Image 1 (tube, one colour):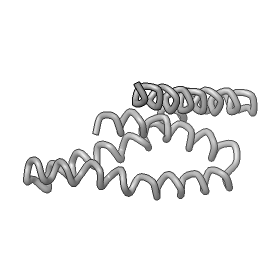
Image 2 (tube, helix red, strand yellow):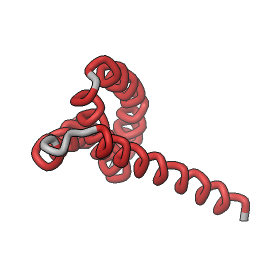
Image 3 (cartoon, one colour):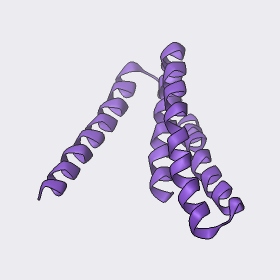
Length: 113
C-alpha cells in the first residue's frame, strides 16, 4: 500500500499539470489513470482482507491509497501552479519519463542477474 501511495502522488501531480495545460489531454489522462487504479485498489484490498479478515481495514487502506492521488494534485496546485509554462511542463514530464525508464532497466538487470 505504501508503494502505491508513493506511486499515486506523482500521478496526481502529472494529472494536474497536464489538465492545467490542456484540458482535453488531461481528461483522457485522468480517465486512463482512473481505469488503471481499479486493479491497484483490488491489489491492496484483497490481500489485506484475506490476511486480517477485516473489511474495514481493507477499505481504509484502499481509501488511503486512493486519496494520495488528489493529494498530489493539491501539492501541484499549491506549489507549482504559478509556474505554468510549456518548458516547465516538458521538464516535469521528461524527469518522470527518465525515472520510469531507469527503474524499468534497473529492475530488468536486477532480475537477469
